Image (tube, rainbow, N blue to C red; front, top):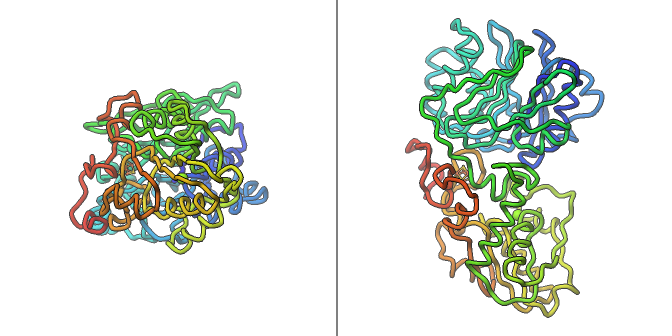
Length: 460
Ligand code: SF4
Ligand code: MG
């Protein structure tokens, strides 16, 4: 999911949030929503669809206020239904709160039991609503917004980057492991105002300056008085999702003071070092494989070229919920450049293989277009384990590398050779401490322990 929020009384907060969500659209395409606060008054509009389909000028004009919270949804828990669209609202004795969540809790079963015991009623099936209701319950037991929120987070286990609007101010929060990203930006209009976004591309689009990341286990509280920071977690330990860096986040977003484009370029260079093969052309699977393909070409000296053209107006295939839709989505999405490919030995680079359906189709298309050899190179290791922290990599039996060897996958997708980047190589080129990332979908080493019944729901 994509989350966004800002406190800016001088601005049209709904409109800025609309643009912020527009830049975060790649993080979720199922539903979109904005809640604004004008003192005690909360206005909220959310619906199924893309940001540009859900909102128009008339709707945005009916969302006045001094602060706003926005969300684009990509469902991992709870089904793809309008009631599950966010922000989630919850009433309290201090007024309504609006919560936008990116991530996935792993202890929803216990949390639901605990809240039910306290007499809390649920409207939806999402973990996000549970967080909102947990905070509301703590407020109603007499705490202020900050103490209530922190008490609620202590009940939560899993991944959560949150933006929460209240009548008093705006909150930005990351779980103690900082699995999902969340950044702070500033808007200078005489007074410094603060913006929160899943990625820096959400700041760029409204002309906000990147200030810093919200840290793992940190809560920032943004009000008329500025920004206050609280390190609420007992033992914060950063485990940023490496898949954000490899694939999920936009290439123009900054992580560790550089664009992810630059990181992905280095993944491609490392891939060339590890698995060079002689060929006439290197190309990427658009768009996500392109930076690594350019890196591969630079390092290997094999010419870079384009052989696949993407229809820009077809959404990311994996976000559409059914397998059937996924498969037809891929046919709609890519076309080949026959005169470029005919008679050529091709190295095709992609960021990841998850189910293997994309790769198989692409390889067939390249051969149909006349490629004489097709070598596939993947700028991440084999995905062998499901994600429980908010990326929909499906159940383990759907992951091609969970049950098949590289040689078997090579055969199944029909390539002359297949090689994945090593796990060490992927982490080395981050230039960061390798222990500061989650890479469980490549190793099964989950940094936040997962209850047995939840594990069983996705593991073979
Ligand atoms: Fe990211 Fe994979 Fe960890 Fe999920 S399991 S948080 S996708 S690295
Ligand atoms: Mg891709």
